Length: 172
Image 1: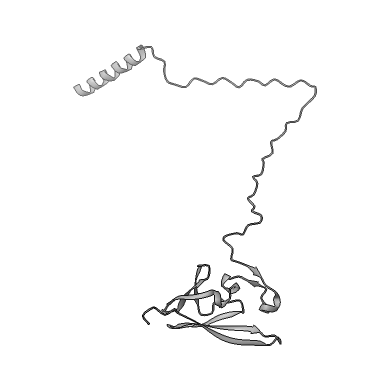
Image 2: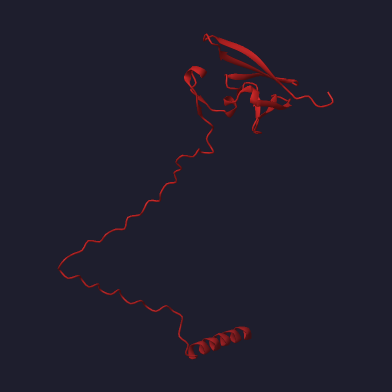
């Protein structure tokens, strides 16, 4: 019982001290009612203009190649038959400009060829290579076989097989 009495006395004392200290309470003050707007004079009325949002200019590049698009080279229709564009840079090179650098044997045989400029390409069976509609037919340990179709001076289509072989090492 003494405990309850001492607690109530303490609360009363704190309450009296806070009320008599003269500090302002932290309760929010009532806001003033909004002021009445003055009506414009009945004369000339000016329209309110809305500001138009300016469109951001789109980024356009004229005269440069998109680096994310494949190469496309136009070729006369009589050279390729039905297809009119070459999409692979290997197709615009002659086989004399291509050197076989390495062969990778596995589930799918692959070969590494290098252009005369030093650019390397990985090819598989079925890859189009060479300017005479050449196609890789076989990749073996000794080399890569390419079958080319070309027209002779009489307009006949001839086929020839070219074998690109690995360069032999000095001791062999």
